[in-house]
Length: 160
Image (tube, rainbow, N blue to C red):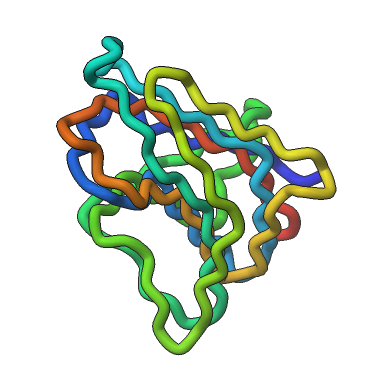
């Protein structure tokens, strides 16, 4: 087993389609996604309820990183572990795009924003990101109005 990390986007006002998380793997290690979680705290009434399209994507080879968000510092689950060797960004309003590489859509979900969403992968279903490749948790659907989203991604670095 490698080193486990979490990255958090906490209470972010979201008004547009975007990559909630983008993980760029280190050049010398693989990254394995174990779980991700989404919740929102602003729209709790029936009239405000929405179904939002969520996808996960893997960028292989030459892809363009998203932009417009912020960098997140992943935290090691085990105290004393070194910093994650790759980078994590949150809330990129310009999403990851294909260059001369490929963009692989791994999953598609409809999220009822009134209910927290937890995607916990079984070992054989965990997305594996090769060195220097990328993974995104994408909000494909723009919310009808501003939604305050909190999200967490749990991942493992093997190698490095």
